[in-house]
Image 1 (cartoon, one colour):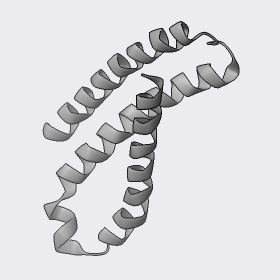
Image 2 (cartoon, helix red, strand yellow):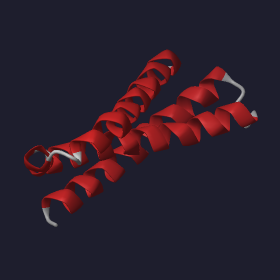
Image 3 (cartoon, rainbow, N blue to C red):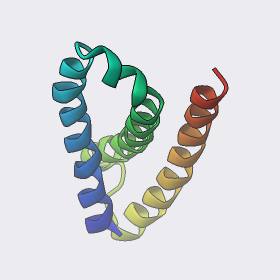
Image 4 (cartoon, helix red, strand yellow):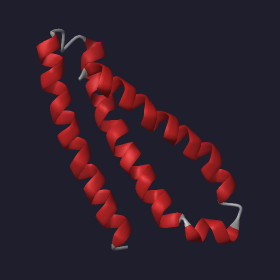
Length: 97
């Protein structure tokens, strides 16, 4: 679980960096920015919600509050359940705004 969460923590981070680099240049292209706007926002916030939730776990792990492997597993599972509602609420916000 720890290696999987670590790998999947870096993937949204790389995606968010690419969004920052590419997204700013897409804002200059008028017709493309309107076409992909909702999909772009949804995927970005899905990655951001997972990245933020997993970042909280990394803060706990790095501070020494979680030292045992069993505690790491028990803190990693709720992180997935914290990321899911954030992503769902973001999806609702984008779809109904």
